[in-house]
Amino acid sequence: MMESALDQRDRRLAYALLRMVVGLNLMMHGVSRLLAGPTAFAEKVTAQFAHTPLPASSVWTFAMSLPAIEALLGLLLLIGLRTRAALVAASILIMVLTFGSSLEQNWPVTGLQLTYALAYAALLFLRRYNGWSLDSCLERDRRQ
Image 1 (spheres, one colour):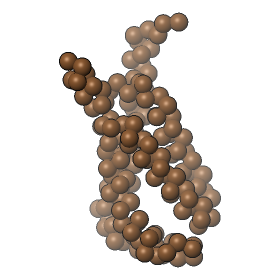
Image 2 (cartoon, one colour):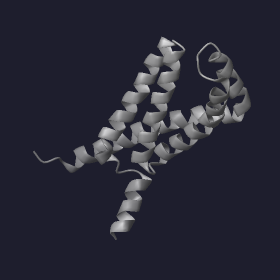
Image 3 (cartoon, one colour):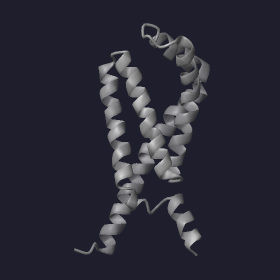
């Protein structure tokens, strides 16, 4: 059965809204941590993981870079630029975060991270509806 133009517009709108709210959420995780000071965030995370077998220096380095990574990936998703790459990177990031939460045995956080993983997977699976995005605008320009 052929999809109506109205159905197609609604799917694109739904995709854009979900992509933007997920992007905004991820971006604000990073921005709020950057504004509060990445050093304070890194100190908190390093102390949180002190009882795990992870070396403190690797936890510190990861925690110092995490806010910038979250802010960048979130911005890319929010505006719909390099959407596929951003979703793959965000999925890998949530996998790393899930590993850390599991190592820490923080099961409530680990469960919440599954929600993020599901959202990233759904957005990747439904990417054909990514019509309201910079990716779509750039693709149209390339075709012309």
